[in-house]
Length: 508
Ligand code: XMP
Image (tube, rainbow, N blue to C red):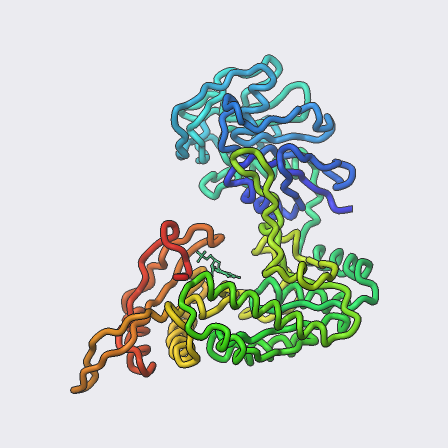
């Protein structure tokens, strides 16, 4: 059975990053709310990590656990709050700080004889939260590293296999972070490092065959990487007992429906392409309010999918490309556990089918690795994210087929330009937006009064925050010229230089 490192989440923003780092080491791990420790035997646990937290150990609402409930044979690593909590609850002293600031620090004293600190050079940079600080340790704890300003930057517990680090080894700025996590997971927990895209595919294909038997499954494809990888994985497991449905709501990119459909067919998928664009345009006619547009498209998608699925016989399962970040239960500041799992578009409720989510354990980069291992073409795997309602949320104001056609052309020029200049993979996502304004221009000797297009390109790692991409001026100038010269009805191009927050990636 797969070995697991359990990460108990005390609400830190970097908890998912801890999990990604452990997975990068080739070790499977799971995040659980701090107060929901799973049965270690049931998940074949080999170690436990306690995450950071927005709280101080002194806060009345601080998340607390009884550390003795973690079986003594499981090594423990406390990170930041996790370390402070272990020290404090065993009689150590933690000094509260009025503000919480993240700063770079450098390890000065390092006990390299300690297994957690093996191969760590003094001087290594770490990312420290200069909030609370441990100022004295319980009797049987030993300090194993210091920084310029903090005496107890890391410690070892004497009475059991447990360690604490006050800095954040999981963030990129901590130069020795990966070594520390490797020392813990591999050196101390003795992880076999058997988690890989190939091992995931083997175990998942076998599990899917067992779970689904001869049952028939339906899956909605969007053209995006998650649903595509889920489909190829299921196809490998159950072949033509899987039927995929790809709905064209009329607001896809230029040629996207035919090109993606062809890709799917080349992958051997049993896929039905449904052109429902006329119905969507009719339902959207005259609607300008962003949320209303989204609701109409969401409902239209569910109705179309449901109608098509009902034409199939004996379907028992609905498969979805849900991924791990969608499933992790997130903690609110009040301590309530919020189930953040969203059933995409409300399909499962409507269809009354059993739910199959073969990617629910994977992070996005792991989904891509699995796709590559399955032999999927690179352009499907590295596609930019694209919103479910498509160009409808990039046309400000009401939607008409004519406006969609204009936007498709402008967007196509922009995206092709990014690819031709080797910039496509350097940005998180990009697209064009059709603005609800007209402005005066001059074309030859003629006065024009035409539409304006905004270009948007952002860099990001998870879409939660994003910066506008600093694309070269020469490139933007070229794209602007190409759009104005080739897209009839457009005489002005702007570049969106807002970051998220406070702006969002999409305009609607
Ligand atoms: P915002 O605009 O909220 O977008 O900064 C964050 C990310 O989510 C994508 N997005 C969507 N994806 N259905 C989706 O599947 C949607 O309705 C939707 N709206 C926004 C957006 O493209 C960006 O990657």
